Image (cartoon, rainbow, N blue to C red; front, top):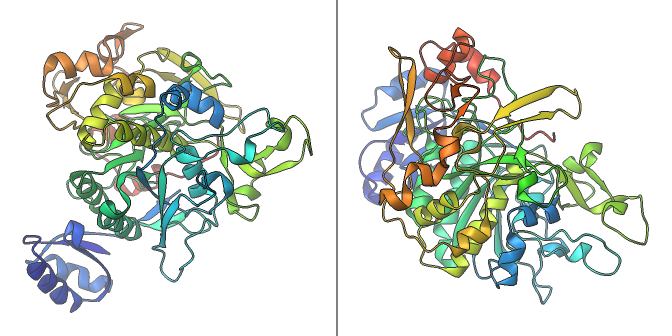
Length: 521
């Protein structure tokens, strides 16, 4: 159980509130960044605690759940390297299942670039990666590709920003599951360590279903604290884009904290084996907006996330035991022990893999211009994102062989696909917060309109510039992507209609249906 405390954030007031709260139960963790505590209390004490004037809000401690050479070329990272921008000197905090110090994550002098490690899991002090997810994510951000470099190899799996320093904050166990309070605690640590390790980016390839407004969600409050401290927070959109169990066709499935308007929320594309961004289509499992309750336009942009080959923590990692994630040596070797299972790399899919691509891009932008604020980084990445994804696409599940259709609207692809080279070439500076806008539904006219965001000069940061004319006001088969009776709010099912817009939702059904994991599709 977590709850936020009334009053200001001054230490004396906070300490006094914590002491009083402790009289109601066992305090497990103090969370001063969001003026809250994580504690265990008897169920019978909840009602009394709700009446306590020092308690602002109570929420459960909810569970959090869990190829590279083509990926980097598709977002033009290779052009950034040619210009000398590889993230050197920038710290990226990876809040995940831990990072194992493998060779690809070393520096030029074979020194580890994992400059700090800590486990936030109760009773577990080992910060290394027993699951295999965190190391894979770290590799997408900053692998140097040493284990696939040389005459023996035909492909090199190098991360987007191979010069970054990695701050390893472990919150997920060997099964890829963790607790929301541990993630908040890790975010607090990243803020505290910001100046020590120049932490400018936090990567959150994890999430939990949206149960409340982002203004109340403790996890959203924590990422906003990091954002306000000068740290770019990049979060996964979720992997429920195929979920039509509530009649929404995958819309309204963005997970927390990706539902927060501050953070950069990332959806996933599928490269189909091409290194060109023009070969990308939206991955059908990528979660879509608008966000539940607040109706925020998400994701903000998309990046390659399907079938990404990256670093393997160790053959004992839980994810490596899944045959579909394994990579054969012959996939990237020219000689040597071909056709054996690689002991250095594995293949994963999901918005969890797309998220570190954007985190690496943010690090590269910050290396070039250390004075950029999180809002300016977000604005540049969105404005320069490629408006090139096809209006219609489809994909087939590799296991069930079921086909799924997508349309390139702003609730599916956001501002478009990441283009690092274009972002580096852009010199515009937004002077206003780059908050993701919300949409408003008019039940009388059955129309949805975009509530304008305050991104400054309308010429530089106008709607059509950020999202593109064809995506923002275009029509598909006579159905307006944003304004008309499309699948998001249209005449599909009464249930789907009310799920997105909140007319009448059976909450117990919603909690089950939107449960999000990191599937390897």
